Length: 114
Image (cartoon, rainbow, N blue to C red; front, side, top):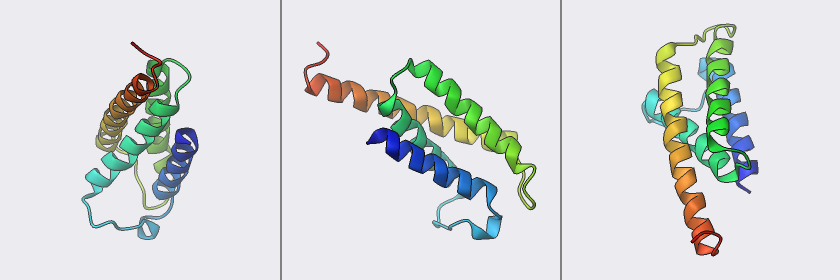
């Protein structure tokens, strides 16, 4: 379930990042908060679903984030910025931390861990 949710969030992020700025949904939140929350959800779902070392998942998430920022330079009216990469990467880190905590709690609740 978490893996499917992660892929859905990833698809929405790609759509919002490479579509023209006027097609982006407006939540009423600040742009940086929107970015942070979206990437936190992404990180959380993939951390929960992870079947490989969490550091590897984190590195994949950073590579995705960097690629997305680079791709925006080729979309008319969009631009990739280091500041945006930092905000999104922090969102991934926060989300993955929460995801690891949720996964550990769930494992303990099932009796999988001491």
